[in-house]
Image (tube, rainbow over all chains, first blue to last red; front, side, top):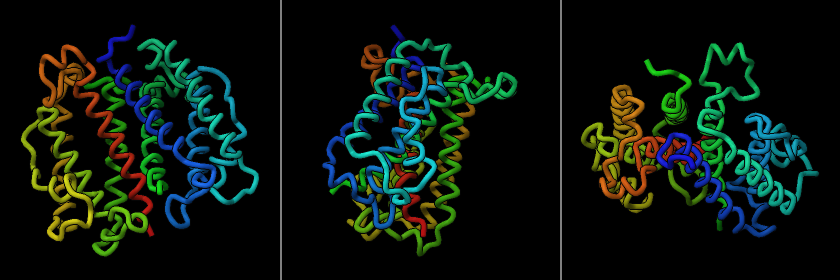
Length: 160
Length: 160
């Protein structure tokens, strides 16, 4: 068992805390609510949720935990802005994908040792990693946790 | 010098990246802009900035880096909601305090060794820390970085 005061345990604890917050927040929105903009003219809640799901999905190959489950989410929620396309995944599809992707990450994280987190992530070459050892998996965990917090701060504005 | 791929270096790098983002974002607001609400009926930019300053100021004693510089900010930006008091610090006062507090934190962080970060923070007793070693200074760093990201996600909505 991991020492609960270790750096990695703290990084995972912070990640899990934000995931729990997001789970609770998004679970509270009806299919009508989820189409609400967080502020006039800004992203809809569904877009934020799909965006977070796509970014978390991309962590699977980045951390060498497996293939992406929903590469199809990128066109709807990453490479195009909200309200630019009619054919985006539904509320139910995003909910299922969000749960599945985060469960897969959780399973992968459990198998990683503390030293695994200091290994290079998959988007950096051996050569570049030798020059900059900060481009490791722990850096991905911290930056994605902050990315989640950033959009959570926005999503709470969509509550009635 | 700290190994730049170490957990602590990564935690500090993530903190610094968010501080830089906040510096740039808030520096771009005029004294008129800063009184704008991030969304109708929500917090004003000045309140968010003051709130972040107060929370960072409180990190000084929490991490045993010194006394608070601006305990007076709490009544305006923490214990009371925005627009409930007329006498809050001005734009210029918040700007100066934000810069001073973060500079003081930076100076303190530079003196901390990797193992210092795993020591208990000052708001937990020796006894409680023995039971839960996750209540350490690194946990404070991670949670305050996410707190900053959360409000940054909101503050960007206040841009014109």
